[in-house]
Length: 126
Figure 1 (cartoon, one colour):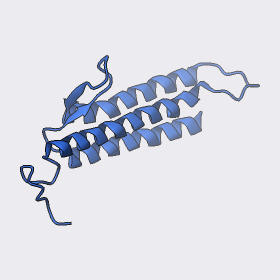
Figure 2 (cartoon, one colour):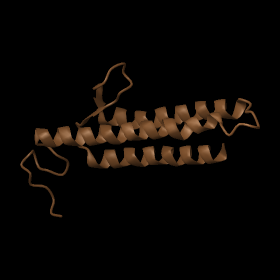
Figure 3 (cartoon, one colour):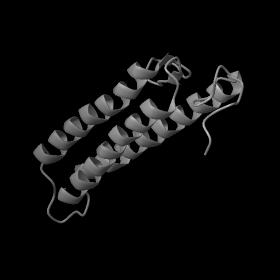
Figure 4 (cartoon, helix red, strand yellow):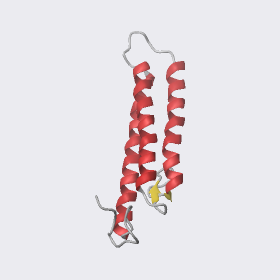
């Protein structure tokens, strides 16, 4: 259980860092998909989505950790309910990665990519 919580904690930190990355790289008016609105393609503002992914991840982390710690396990079984913590958080992390990637691609298709001046393609020198 300790290993599962450690991996889950690392994934939660990765979600927070990914949100910081998205906040720095996406333009202020970016729309990020948030797939918890009952349907796919539920576009939210950048700030809402980038805050929602780590908050949802933290809530699920706490819920699954409490369930995993309170359920008795059979000492003869190698199965532990805590194994679901890193699995579920990994799925949320992958969804967040894809959502930020989709927001960046959509922004690039509109011609107003991050670091460009009014869609002219003239961004900062690299």
